[in-house]
Image (tube, rainbow, N blue to C red; front, side, top):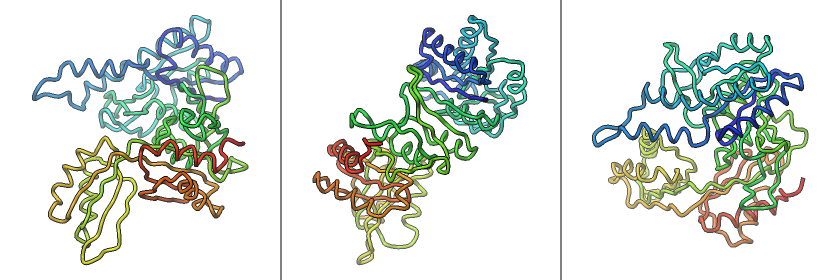
Length: 406
């Protein structure tokens, strides 16, 4: 088998942990597998590098998103990949480390948030055929002009999935500090159960609604390239969670998980002019500031007026309020509520089962939890509620759908 393994910052946080990673890699190699390893920078290293750059900021000058930033930011992974190669070599194994550029990862030229455009796998394939364990620096690549680029948040996961797809690997293993995807956050509901298999679409929904195991970009790419993903812990040998196509899962549960997102704010615009184009202008202006609008509810017009409610990340409220000031002539009042949370149930089995929504709302009513907004799709139901009731809602939903049972 050809396996791509990715180890995050906590997994390679110091030299002892790098030795532990080397042992896991050796276990796979001794099974007869060909192994490509993608590594992040040591935990805290990227923040330290950002701090170094910020020491050159002063009034009137900020560090630009540019070439030199990527040179600095990419250095953390360079250290880790070489240390892991040395750890493997010290135990008698053929290992070689490559930068993103040496590994053939080609990106556009958008510094600090580049997108992968292709991968030339010839060098890696040649090294694997010679019996090498290949270690690749994650989070980075190079433009066609040869400039170092970085991929932004979650970039190392993205590197691993892209390499797995390009190499047509049998499996891509994402090692983190958690041992899989759970039915909900175990810190909220101790009876949360680890999920054995979950579809790409379900994982995308859970990731977008607060689950921190994987970021959307990686899951989207895995689905596009049909890469089987396993997420597991680097600190134990427990089985992880397989993220795969819906067709590869024999028995789909009605609901797979409950997600909680506390980083939500509700914007309410009252008595807005009920005329074509106003909503389009508002959301276009928010989009220009990279503000991600999630749930949207508009009331039926009355007397030429309507109300518009929508949710955005809490961290973007100040910018959104500034954007909306220019539309003040079109509405009567503007309110912002940051004391809310989004609770969601997710499951591809919902498509073929009736009564899922009524059960959900019954659970909320039983706990006397008021629902402010509702959003649905084929495989999810999301509700905006008071943040003080959020954890109680998660536990109630987890119980009513019997997610603690296999």
